[in-house]
Image (cartoon, rainbow, N blue to C red):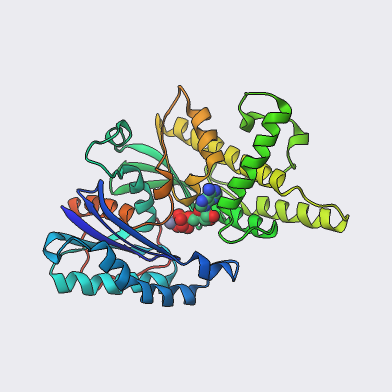
Amino acid sequence: MLILAIESSCDETATAIVENGRKILTSVVASQIDIHKQYGGVVPEIASRQHCENILPVVMEAMQGYSFDDIDAVAVTYAPGLIGALLVGVSFAKGFAKAIEKPLIPVNHMQGHVASLYLHESDSLSTHEKDLAPPYLALIISGGHTHIAEILDYTNFNIIGRTRDDAAGECFDKSARALGFPYPGGVHIDKAANEYSDLLRTTLDTTETLYMHTDATCCYHLPKPKVEGSEFDFSFSGLKTAVLNTIHNAEQRGETIDKNKMAYSLQKTISEILVEKTLKAADKYGYKTIALAGGVAANSGIRSAFTSACEGKYQLFLPEKKYCGDNAAMIASQAYYNFEAGIIADAYLNAYASVPF
Ligand code: KG4
Ligand code: ZN
């Protein structure tokens, strides 16, 4: 079954064609980062207008080599995200599905991120894709969400922890902005943190895992906020404020912040918070398989922190870095499972900025 999917929930206009939920035949992503960069973040109205301009060329590009008859269904992200941006994709997909007389499949963006774990590009499945199937525990970390979810089956997710305020990605991006890195800052924090850990590695002359290193002089002290209520909920706004305060206090004292050291400290603190809660949730709910998904799952520090923490105890699945960020292949993958479960939209499909999941 070939599904053509459309994703426009934030600042990427994307289309992909995926076979049977797993094999990517084509994937096109038009990023708007260069436009939003000059404003230091995504400007929703500009994002919507860009989606309007990009959507047809992106779909045409993805359709190269395919005819409308080859497509068995059209899928679209309908929630959560920027409402104006989502509406462009939903409206286009409705018209497109009607025009080619194929079913329309609605996809939740966060479920789509999880489906990025199933994607592959060649006929031969790696051990990775063969092995991952529900049930398992997922940590979904993006620019707007931080969820620990039980993936009970392909379409049935149970959230057991979520952020009370900022998402991990937002904490990365706002801290990066305060350090003078361009939008989106997460990837720049990652790079700067690596430069600092390379430096630490040479000065410490040690091969032990740096993320477990506890020498306070190596890091800026950043708090790990306690969250009242659900033991699996997150809070990242206090951590973000601590980064901003450390920078401002240093400026007032006429000192300069070591950007790489701050990036390393932030990445280490976020990694530790995520690892601690996820593994605790895995133990409490009885999961031996853990998977990461979402844009922040591309972070090398988080990936290595989970890899060392899970070694010998849990089976860990990480999506390919290039499918961590927003793309339409993951939406097509999730759509396949939605279709199998009978989740099909009609012409009244609407977009929603937020949904319970
Ligand atoms: O999933 P995503 O592409 O979009 C949303 O659905 O929000 O996630 C975007 C987030 C941004 O906050 C971005 O800075 C972050 O993912 N991100 C990273 C890295 N690559 C992307 N954060 C930390 N390290 C990275 N390497
Ligand atoms: Zn996303």
